[in-house]
Image (cartoon, rainbow, N blue to C red; front, side, top):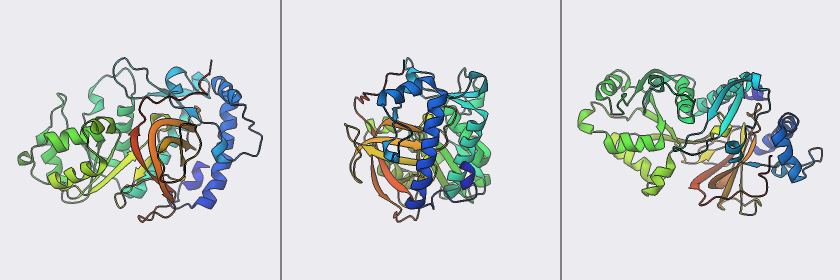
Length: 354
């Protein structure tokens, strides 16, 4: 099924066709994980959900994202796991663990590449990364931050890391990069909070020889820190435009539990878009579906997870779907806004996987 979209624009598939194949694939994935992951099987049995019934896509049981912090959920033998991802978190937090076999890891890269080609084009661009080089550090775990940097770095060439080992801006390396590549299109990548901290707050314009007017910025995550200081997406964008003349700004939304099948924001419209590989629903506190332009908990579905049951999850984020197939930017599929983390999120009724 993933190969079906290899040479197709994943944002040009309309609702009628997508609904049909997506339903069949989610049904198949649910059955696959039911047969191969004992904890997942117990969860589905608790729902009393009959996989053989003629169900609609919205009816398939979702599992709360926090279960990946409590249990080692995998649908392949441990000997087949080639990579384990862990979520980002503060010290002392229990982190999610995601187990990937060779096929799942490969599909993540292929899907991510196909999605990003719509925003960035097919040509790899010189890339400025607003972070430290993770290769400098001997990390005991492959965390979500390192995974994102390494994962997105495939879309660039001639990589330059803004921060040195002491976590300070390396103006010498930055100016060498801008002098060499700043005259034409280049890519800037980083976590939202790192972009704000370093490009908006710390960067001294007097020390920079060229602006960022030819850049495309791709950023994601880290909104929690900005919410605390009342920095919205629109304010964030405006500050970048004013300070460094950066106009093409694309946010992305995704979870380590569904790495690869991210949702990207078109810099033409400012909305996040679901691709052919993903689907989104918004539910109220009773888990009933909400109409468009109503705020609620975000449910995410993905065709990518095969080595672990992450294909249908309930997040702890609040969002609202704006519309489908009719966005002014021209991208098809659902388009939506994420408003942030739910306060004191409580996911009940489906967490007994013992």
